[in-house]
Length: 91
Image (spheres, rainbow, N blue to C red):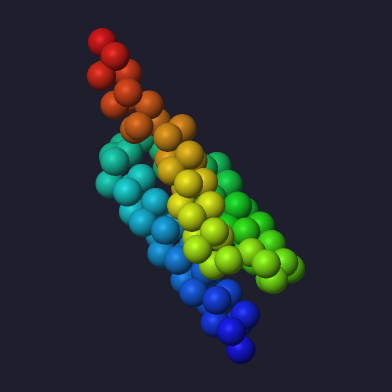
């Protein structure tokens, strides 16, 4: 029962983070095309982390959540709005 509850919490966190990423990209891109590739990479990464959590009992819930949060930040860094902000800060 504990393993199922931890998996449900992890899936909930992944879904909420992915939805937040999608909302932020929609509001930031405006008329630019939506980055579906980045969203797909985020979804695939979430599925991989959930499958690793289900397979390995020694993987703590906090480690899985932390690794997905860092992965989501890494994916967000390579989207067009963030790159434009970094370019404007450099100039």
